[in-house]
Amino acid sequence: MADNTIINVKDVHKTFVSEAKQSLWDRFRGKTHEVKRVEVLKGVNLEVAQSETVVILGSSGSGKSTLLRCINKLETIDAGRIYVHGHMIGYREQNGALVAERASVTAKKRTDVGMVFQHFNLFLNKTALGNVMAPLRDIKNLSAADARIKAVHHLEMVGLGDKLDNYPSKLSGGQKQRVAIARALAMEPAVMLFDEPTSALDPELVGEVLAVIKRIAQAGTTMVIVTHEMQFAREIATRIVVMDQGLIVEEGPPETIFTNPQHDKTRALLSRSQTSPQASES
Amino acid sequence: MDFITDTLAVFPSLIGAVPIVLQLAAGAMILALVLGLLVALARISQFKVLRAIAVFYVEVIRGTPLLVQLVYIFFVLPSIGIAIDPIPAGILGLGLNYAAYLSEVFRSAILSVESGQTEAALSLGYTPTKALWKVVIPQSFVVSLGPIGNYFIAMVKDTALTSVIAVTEILKTANILNSQTFQTTEIYTAAAILYLMLSLPLSRIVVLLERKARSRG
Image (cartoon, rainbow over all chains, first blue to last red; front, side, top):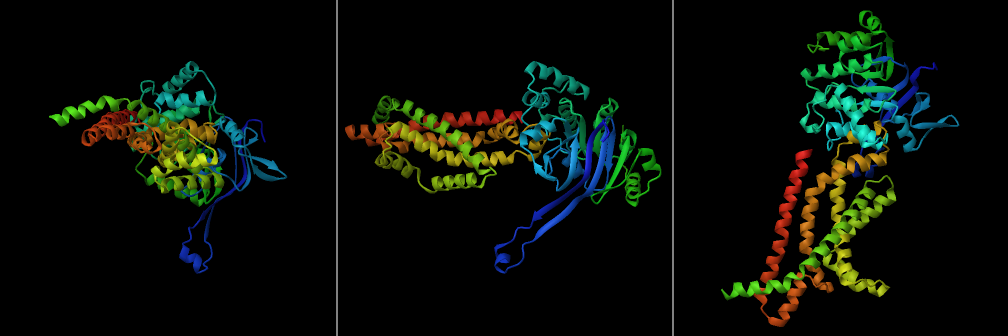
């Protein structure tokens, strides 16, 4: 593992198990208990180095969001290892097996990883400023004055210096997402994860969010982005990773991927994006 | 005209019971809020035993009349050596009873806060417990403000039940007056009006509080 490796995902497997609710009648008839298994990650390996901007592409169901959520331990994993800054997140190793670690330990490690969600997930009872200040106060234990200075700075950075006192209900989708970005960024994580940050936005609001993400990338922040915005991916990525059915099928610099795709899935993704009328504005 | 002046004349003797009613309602409400939240947390806990205890508590309380619970606390508990004075017994009975109902209010309010916010909090470094207390519970309190207010108004009226365990609240005072003067109509009319005078402003306050809370979200 190189010294500047921020994220190291090694052979990660993840299966979603959903137990079909069995009716009383089925149980009387002795019908076997039905358990549905979907293997979403089938051995994924991914290394992200400092200052890299890795964009993960793939159709829905390919496992890209799940992979991102595993890096933050918002999902458990069945096998493999995920290291962030050299530390395993959510687990410790005991006799070669994964053992869940204490929630407080995981929480501390998570401050190294900032995450931006598709549906913003702002605290609805707090203003834009309150949203950014809350973790600075609650987790970083900054004084109210220090937290405020820092929060205002980050909100100005995403262009929301005039919306400090607005509650989420009084913000547009694009503004909400920018608050969410400021909130994650203010914690100064080693890496930022973006889980389809523009998928829930009206088309005319996508540009402002992408512009902010681009600016952060240019500032040298390490990022992993899951997106469907092909043009944006091409402009911003230092490396593109294509996932299909729980596996990484192709990866490389954007120019290579976009001009000379090797895998059928990559070609299919690219051709679909070219026919789609929605072009990125940034 | 005699009826009105006679009814009005009863008020001064009843009004002395108002502080006791407020004391009962306030004390029982505080108990119900704290215990109700604890029961709600137990019900959504990951520990099966805690969940079972909470369900049992809620079912027992909701399945028996408040009047019976009050009588039980005041008349039955002394037989096992726990003697409680009328007012504390009233507070205890009302509090235990309303805690069961409030726990259901809290539980649904906690579950109504979208899970995305908890995930965001976790990703920012909150522990699950801290996320619950700092992010989810403050919001569920706002959601439950209306139902809590309505239960409080109901509780003010239910304090009348404590008359059977010798608390000299409004109804008991009225009963005593009635046995002395036999002005039944005037006395109980005055008592009813007095309850109305307590609950009407309260429902007004609840509406205002709710409107204020909603304007923020």
